[in-house]
Image 1 (cartoon, rainbow, N blue to C red):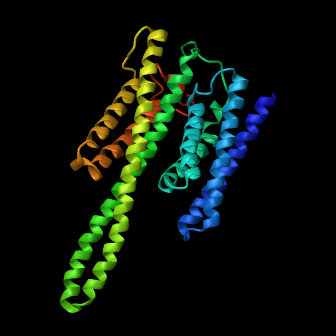
Image 2: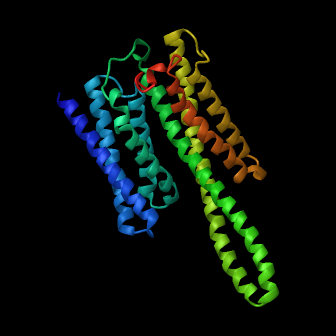
Image 3: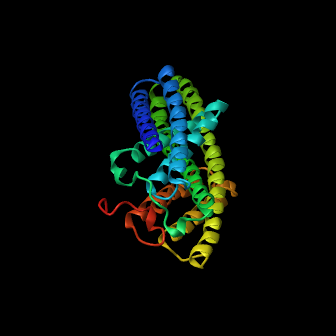
Amino acid sequence: MIFSTLEHILTHISFSIVSIVITIHLITLLVDEIVKLYDSSEKGIIVTFFCITGLLVTRWISSGHFPLSDLYESLIFLSWSFSLIHIIPYFKKNVLILSKITGPSAIFTQGFATSGILTEIHQSVILVPALQSEWLIMHVSMMILGYAALLCGSLLSVALLVITFRKNRQLFYKSNGFLNESFFLGENVLQNTSFFSAKNYYRSQLIQQLDYWSYRVISLGFAFLTIGILSGAVWANEAWGSYWNWDPKETWAFITWIVFAIYLHTRTNRNLRGANSAIVASIGFLIIWICYFGVNLLGIGLHSYGSFPSTFN
C-alpha cells in the first residue's frame, strides 16, 4: 500500500513537472529565448529524471521484478533513458545541441506514459513464465537504451537535413537575387556577399556539429542494440528452445540493426557523409518506432505481452 501510494505520488509529480516544462518550451519557441525560462526547463527535466528514477525503484520493490515487463514500464524506462542522455551534456555545458533533442523527447515520452491513455496497464502484474529470468534486465534495458540513443541520433540527422535543405534553397534564391542586384546596385553586392558568407559559415558549423553528434550518439545506440539483440537470442534459446524465431518484434529489430549498420557504413565513406548518411538515419527513425511501438499495436507474436490492452485495440 505504501509503495503504491508513493508510486502514485511520483507519477503525478513527474507528469505535473512535464506539463510545466512543455509550457515553458512552447513559450521559448514563440518568444525569443529567455535565459531564466530555459534554465528552469532544464532543471525541470533533471527533477523529472529523479522522479522517474524513484518511480522505477518503487515499482521494482513493490512488484519484486525489474520494471520492464510491459509497454507502460518500457515507456517509463525510455523516458528515463532520454533524461539520462539529456543530463550528460547539461553538466558538461558544451553539448547544448544534443540537449535540444533529448529534452523534448524525454518530456513527450513521459507525458504520454503518465497520461490517461495507458491507465489500464499502470498496475504491476505477475510476470509471465517467459519473463521470469535474469535476462530480463540485460536484454530489455539494453534494447530501450539503444532505442533512446538511436532516436536522439536520428533526430539530429533529421535536423541536419532540414537545415541543409533550407541552406541550399536560400542559396539558390540569393544567387538569383545577386544577379539582379549586381545589375542595378553594383557596389552593394560585396557587402551582401560578406554578410551571407558569415551566415552560411555559422550554418555550416551547425551542420558539422549535428553530423558529429548524430554519428557519436547513433554509434552508442547501435552498440546497445547489438548487445540487446544478442542477449535476447540467448534468452530466447533458454525460454523457447531457439535462438531466433522470426517473431515480428525480432524481425523489425533485425531490420533496425541493418538500417543503422548501413548508416555506420556510409560514415566510412567521405563522399557519403552529411546529408546522405542523414537520410539513412532518418529512415531508421521511422523503423525504430515501427519496431518499438507499431508492432505492439498488432498484439501478436511472442512479444505480445508488451502490447496495448485489448480494449484499446
